[in-house]
Image (cartoon, rainbow over all chains, first blue to last red; front, top):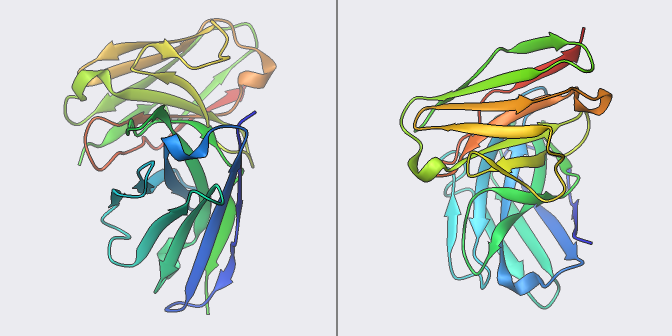
Length: 122
Length: 108
C-alpha cells in the first residue's frame, strides 16, 4: 500500500539549514507530484510547496519562497525539502503528501506521511 | 487569497447524531475545487471529500459533501465514536491553496 515516511526533523537554529526527506513506497513514484504541507503546534494546515512528477515544475507558498527548495530523486523514490534560513515561525510538523492525479497537479492530497517535527530555536 | 471560514469552531454531539459542518469562502471556489479532511490528535490528515461532493477511496457513505460557489457543507449522517476529530476544508482552485481553521467535533 502507499507509504510515505518523512525524516530529518529536529531542532535547528534560526538562519541555519535543514533537509527533510520523504521516502515513498508501494506505488509508482515517478508519475506523481508531491507536496509539503505544514502544521504549526496547535494550529491549522498550510500548503508549503509542490514538485511535479519529473521535477521540472516547482511552486512555493509566499511564506517560504526564496528560502525553501523542494527537490526529488526518482531513482531513490524520495522527495526533499531544503529549509534555508529558517525562522521561528517555520516551527511545525511537516507532512509529505502525494498529489491525487498522475502526471499533473490537483493540489488535494489522498496520501500523507506521518509528519516530522521541525523546531526553529536558538 | 481565498479565506475559508469554518463554523462552528467546536461542535458537541453524541454518537448516532447527525453532524453538519460549514465552510464559507471569501471568494467563489472555481469548479467546486473544495475538499474535506479529518484529523485525529497526533495523526496526519485524512482526505474525506474532494470536488465538494466526491468521497475519497475507502470513506464510509455516512460522510457526504455538498455546496458550490462560496458555501460548502460536510455532513456526517450518524456519528460513530471514531468520527470525533478535527475537520478541515481546503480550496484548491486558486493559489495559494488554503485551508480553513478547522472544526473540532467532540463527544457531548
